[in-house]
Length: 289
Image (cartoon, rainbow, N blue to C red):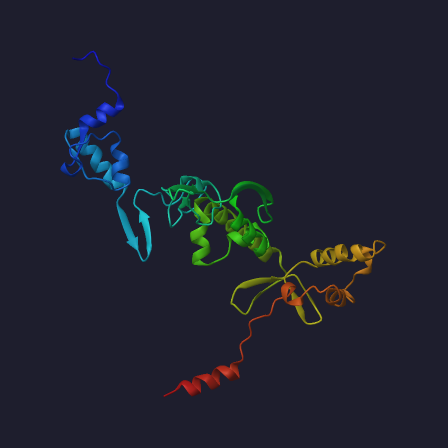
């Protein structure tokens, strides 16, 4: 009777049994039944009861607005990245390791000449691409759906695609995209802090955000260093005139050369937030009942 070796599956069958709905079928992997919300389980032994409680506690959920958080989910992982609000995909687990844009496999029916229909499973068009992040100054080898790759090119780069603040974009990022987004945003915050420390002047722009002013020229407040702007103009000028020199670009012709090579001043300058006291007083008087 006891000569037969006891396997893990047999232990699971001893601790659990399926409900009467499933005609008394044995349960080989009880955790999958709880996670995927299949047929209810009935614990036969004390060990099975304790195990069932642990599974139920792990899947306990709290609804906050429209977002569902797992109680078992840690607040921060080892890299200090908050958990992804929409969780990992349990249906298509491959999408958790790349940028799949919320695409999943789907089935279609193929009809043969004999009118026989067969179901075929279609997968998303996935390729492996090496994408560069300018903020992190490194490349990532990622599985990317071609639709997402086109969106990255339209947005102007990986950083612009990851940091777009829309609900639809955050939903389609997935766990891997969320992790990259958090890394990019953290690095951008560090760069902004350093820029504010090194800046000669800090002003509030029209949106009320602190912006560093590196230098002023002809009434324009530039939020980028002068060397960076001069080098950008020099690179464009070398394409048209290889004999040009960096010393030819100075404060007198800087703005004119920017207009010549169609470099928009709005991108390089900041408009300071100003308050007109007379307008505020007039608004307050009109607001009086």
